[in-house]
Length: 150
Image (cartoon, rainbow, N blue to C red; front, side):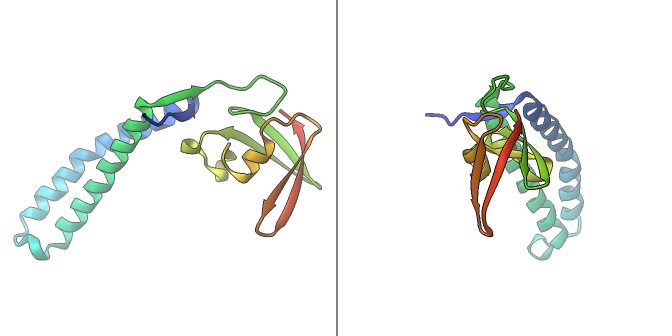
């Protein structure tokens, strides 16, 4: 059974752009490899090794993105009053306010405010409504968030 990857339309578009960029790098990497081969003995050729390593990284990421896109399940923006996959939520803890977008694990990026539904915060928020409180256990202790908007 194939694994389905849950992504938003925005996340799918970002993956497609990254895939296009990576495929564009293939030519430059092939040229690096060809140039490094011209240096002679490949057994002690650092440029050749570096170019082959870069090629391996690019090819593995291309394969990963292609697999994700082939098995993607698009998350519809959650318009309900309860928090679910695709919801954008504003939370308040004391005087601090934060906004999170609940997404699938593939496109989670906490630095951009995108958190996975499988993360501790995501799990604590799922199914909650405006006015509810969600408590998250962190290494520094528990944090309680009040849900301001969904």
